[in-house]
Length: 243
Image 1 (cartoon, helix red, strand yellow):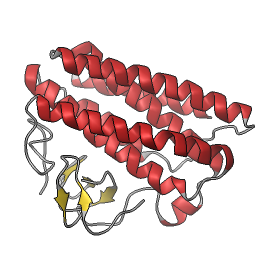
Image 2 (tube, rainbow, N blue to C red):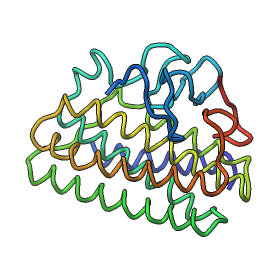
Image 3 (cartoon, rainbow, N blue to C red):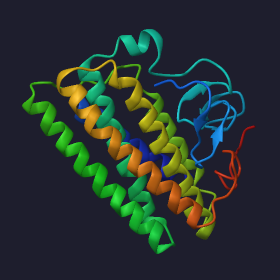
Image 4 (cartoon, helix red, strand yellow):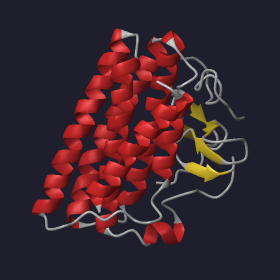
């Protein structure tokens, strides 16, 4: 699939998610590789270019390596309504399902392909059940106009795979699954204390699912040859890293 084709493919999925929708940790923390680092901002990967958006090892996105968090913090977090929170969960499900569909289509390793299929099925089903729960609870999901970073992140990740093939593609895809699920989990933990009612119920139900998905992705990434204690070129083979 061409670079333009991949970006367009994921953008369509993001648009569908938006149409359908009409905790910051300090100190030592577990990295996506299972190690423990003294500072979450030390290990990570640039999502665009050096000095731009930085995804740290906990899953939080920053402006620059040690800059202010890029989303779900401060006034933005306080301004998130329950409808916005449910919509955020639905969008993440759609984006992850689309990224997983790419894995089903392109993975060469049968275990990676099976994992991608499981993620596709899991997130598709979770999105449907979450929408059903919110509907029955009388809560109509409404995406916040400022809630755009996850869409950007997912589109960039898909495009970053275009220059890879074979085993490198499989490892790149699995490293992105680790990072994506780590990021989703970080968001959910932050949203937990700012939700109530149906939204709080959905967040509570989704946190263990995201944690299990992240752990499974990490195990498989290691199994197929993923190495290193930092994000960067080891996490994005052939891509841009950042230290």
